[in-house]
View 1 (cartoon, rainbow, N blue to C red):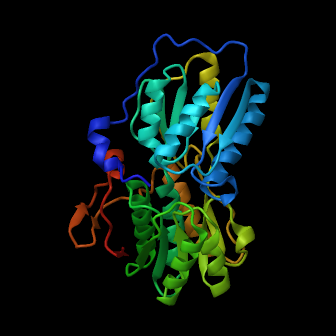
View 2: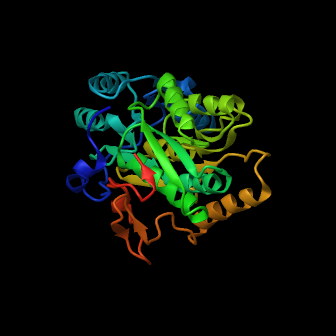
View 3: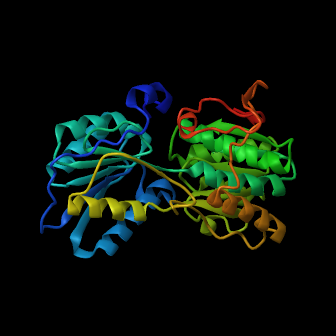
Length: 358
């Protein structure tokens, strides 16, 4: 994982500027060749699986107008540049780089191939032919936190975290704040595994947390290993990026589901008809990019109702995951009463709310 973070470059990158492509023609009658680069295996049943599932849905919806390919398990770093160059050289005109750590490489390669459209998931640096897109996962974390606050008997949640970038930090904070609305004394213990996909590390971290009194597990890593351990140890948990019920039918309460297909379809259509433009897209529950999978039938009806109230409140704007007052770990007020965090503050978030033990 690159040490590059949003907060290191957000000022230089600008605030989600949209740079139109000038004079780019439509592709004509040939099928659009689109390629995807994944950080994990498509069988991770999480992040990379969700992107690949969306790729298949896009190809099916677009019929013969689009043909796709993918490369899986590409490390974040120099190897990503090589893969991106090869995909461009193979004639792909729309290339999706689907992990934060591909950012420097996507920027560089987009400048080498100005006639190719590039898309970078969760990034913030753009060029004339490189766009960025993301999903507001923190909104789903608020739903999960609400459930955790109601169902945890110990009042201690465990969070298996990948890397301390703002994307992950805001999720930890949203989860904790939502749980604290139910139980003001709720604590979230965080273990960093420094990987997006490492089932062994994720499982070991989960066991360590449960041994420390955690009775509800959530994660910002991609394998079902934490849920499998939760199932074995008799605690509850939440899936990541997709429904993981099959791995833990008793432990799995629900999951955040990533639905990238609508975005992929819209970008493929834009590439075909010549209207593609560089810019930034950040969709959430309202737009359907983030979803909540079916709730476990074992969840009490009152908990389901509370979770749904949060989900619907985020969609209609009556629930703000970061409504103040909010204090950080040191007790310093970060958000005053009546205040919130705007997108710029969320995208550079590098502090934890009170109650997070990281």
